[in-house]
Image (cartoon, rainbow, N blue to C red; front, side, top):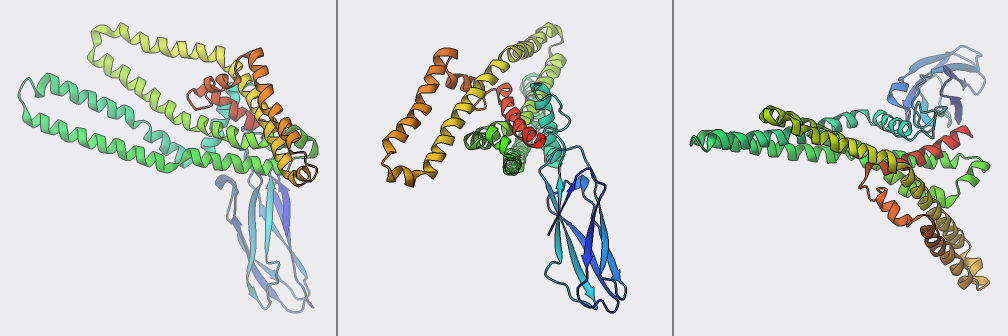
Length: 388
């Protein structure tokens, strides 16, 4: 038995029905159990329900805590247990389905604003994996600390340990170096153990699959099988890379800050040289601003073409018995080749090689800005199904 309610509802009412003659007093306890509700939106609830003589039903009120974070439909269970003067029937457990009315990514209204979509997507992922994300960010700060320690040990060796023939400093520096190396390695292993990219892929694919299965007919026409397969594959892979690239960006940013601070402390007479790292960052930002829209369009074309031939191949596989019966294999293979091979070179001549653009856009994860499109694609699927 399922009870549907909206996330914005304040409570949902359940009815406990008593079968039989209704004679005598009975009681039963109920308790809730979380399945997939976000922790901040779930409150453990339980109570005892008493039936008076002749009473055949009683109401139970389950409180609902709303939030503004997007999620797939959430589930919780309500169990009946500890019956007194009665026996529990087969329907002793019910499911409460909480329908989500928030947009994906959370708090993003303009889905054409790529910057807002990416920021909203990252906030959503950090919110979903709050503890692991915070630990991951903390772990990624240490490489900058490790670099600073190594540079300080080198300066100590060059300026004091070796010129002054201080073996005690050399031994101490070697010990510090080994400890620093071990800590760096251990934190890298701890970061890998978080498996943040795998968690992101699992969450996004489950969310997209659940959303796709609830689409109305018009939305299914807009997102055919091939397009959904692409988003579940390429789209999710690139979107999860956007999430993990946030940690890489944190590591690089911390490294830049520590390098500048270390250089400023040790080379105070050449502070003007520190302008070059900032100039490099500015150049990268300008390049990003000019290239990301075009690369997004190329990647969009790539996904559309991939979706088209995947949808066709799926349809042909489903109809393979019919194709074999009517000996239409050659014709259907030719149709597949035309769609898979001919259209792409045509567009390459018109707008430049799509595959090269995909690689330049970071399909292999080389550039942060191009992978942003994947999160936009994921958000389009979720937003379309939510609007519908």
